Length: 447
Ligand code: SF4
Image 1 (cartoon, rainbow, N blue to C red):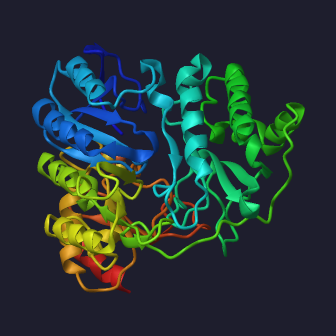
Image 2: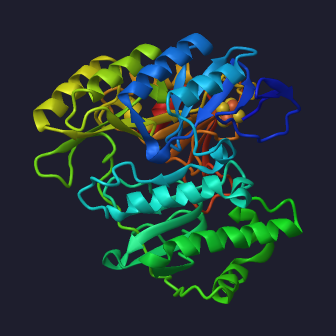
């Protein structure tokens, strides 16, 4: 993110590169203030959707984004409205446990945790408990706002391609958690991904997480450059962390063979059975990750017709899940949402596309990637093509792992095209074509 100023509590403050927006920290972007709302396990009620619509309309430019960490961003926040905006969001139930805990409350779980056919329901309480400790413990509040934690309870609808400072993945029939740092769980069939650092019994998960964080904070005390697990490993190495855990008497065992099971693609789109008899969840994706106030009201209307009423979950695929529906009801909701522009099926071109905020919203952007993505979607309609990420500069805000194909903007109408390849030097993969237009890119993607 490239921004020029931060408004905190309504006060203009000196910026430093890489600062994240928050509920109480509005970052100045090209299209105005940017506010990020972190949600507990991606949960958002229909009343909150309606409140969000009103706040985005009255205090911002009406653009509401779902982020790749299942959070919400409000764009175009008007000057001098930062403090009022935070108060309105607090009143709508978006506040952290205490204001100092805002940055560290994003403990990720798979978005169907608690009702997935395969998941372990204990993960929900564990995540809640850890989030509360992170928010309310002063030393943990000092973690980088980018610090990320994933608790994978073995769900079918799983977050498999997001890197985290710490990840835990349930294994051995729910007895243990495999865990790793500055990476993601290695997947079935993969050879080159970073192996799990070890495994611990389920009941030791909480101790493990906070001991790992303590290890990071101790290392940070020796060098301000160590803010994330990636930097800890670069400076001290994995063995240092393993020794630290042993010193704290955590019963970790090596587990190099761990591979996370990979289920069918697109479990985050369409209708799927839940763990409850004859109940389904409906998953949809917001068109290129953005909503309007009118779409927020539509989501609220739909949420109020599902069985549990009013509860939805955001997904890191920039989508929304309606968790508890009868089959017919879910089908009807899917029709309504598709007519309104939501992606409801894997066959829709936008199901395979992500892009960043682009030209109008970000000062680093070189191209209007959102318009180009829509053009590409029209061109590729009905064809089989590689999933694609359009990035308006090489910072890659919309994806933290190489997509199967990535277009990186060079100027307003030209891109370099990369194909994912773990052996390549570039974070995007192997360069397949240079300086091509969006129409030329469409031809490459079909090959
Ligand atoms: S990737 Fe996109 S949103 Fe991120 S800094 Fe570059 S242009 Fe801006």
